[in-house]
Length: 76
Image 1: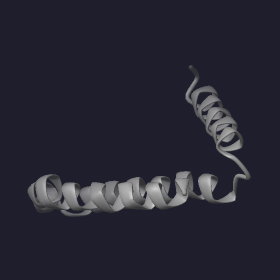
Image 2: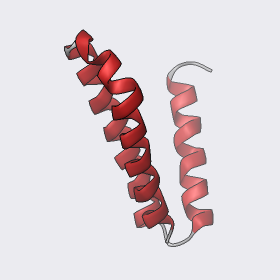
Image 3: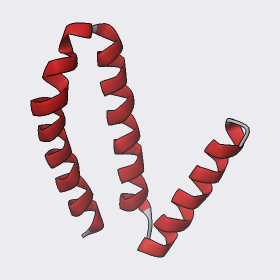
C-alpha cells in the first residue's frame, strides 16, 4: 500500500512541477534537465526502499541509515 501511495504522490508532484515550475525553467535547458533527472532518480530510488522493505519500520530504518550516510558524506 505504501508503494501505491508513493507512486500517486509522484504523479501528483510531477503534474504540479510540470505545470507551475517546469515550464518556467524550461528556457534554461540542460541544467534544468539534469536537475529533473536527478530528482526523478532519487525519488524512484527512495520508492524502491518501500517496495523492497518487509515493513514500514524496516523502510524507516533504511531511510534513517541513508540519511546518516549522506550527512557523513558531506561532513555534517
